[in-house]
Length: 360
Ligand code: ADP
Ligand code: MG
Image (tube, rainbow, N blue to C red; front, side):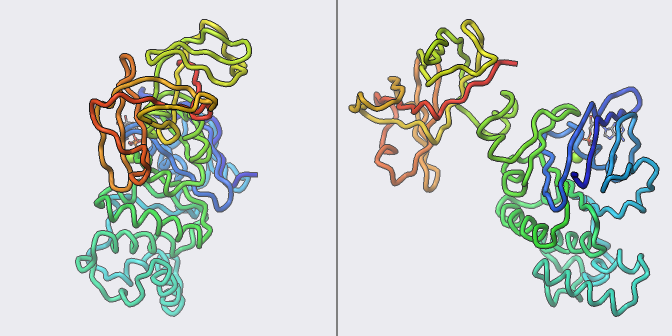
């Protein structure tokens, strides 16, 4: 049985619906990321789980018990919000020990637990520092130590790294995941950043306007996005509209870049005449000056290189095909990355690079 179960939750502010029929679970020790654009209801969902807002209908259960009549402070959950600042008049030690003193622990027990937490977030010997003597990243680690110190049964983190610059954020994502996994605490982590969700999550719950669009492991969402919005939000760029024109043995799709034939059979719900979206993985399609292996089981299209961008270890090649454009990402060390704008090329697509989505 999942530890946290949100079942058919609805919530509104006044007459405005904000959470509509949300169902989600978290298993013990699982790291669930709520991912979605600003305003889609992520913070509201956390506040509902914390008991700071009340459901219009639906249930939230923890460890098998309905939380409906459990007061927020009796739930034993921890919160870490981006703007939940450290107490500026206390040093690191005072901040991390705050929740423990509130619980009435003896000063010796507080000290042992704070030391343990500072070791966990790699800030041993920082206890006497004042808040203003810490870097942005160190502050977030102190805030994490503070929320973990009382050993919450569930930790909710609301965009905890959003105020940091990209390099620091990426380093901390890895640390935060490692720390949460070491502690084994079940966590709900909110972000609007797909890369952060990929770095942190066991499970991503993709939200749009108060509803869950798709939930699953990061790789599943990336390989099999449920909708165009999920695909685009996860950074998939080669998305072309098409119509199924053949679905007997192989599936044939007429698109703006030509007719694509992919190994059949068609997904059960698709038949001739259906509009579909064709997703082509940018790391599985290649650009070649000449394609001279007619025996290979690949789709070959002709195009013209519009632009080649150098991105560190990788090249990003934009190719105009018909009225559309396809992007190929290839290692800079790969000879296939060596093309120039204006050059005529072949685009080589193995059928496994293609995913078909029904149009919404
Ligand atoms: P997110 O965290 O995904 O950005 P929020 O849960 O903060 O989204 O907000 C969801 C929607 O609810 C937004 O349209 C927001 O304007 C609205 N909202 C949030 N808090 C309140 C409130 N206290 N009163 C009225 N509307 C609110
Ligand atoms: Mg928010």
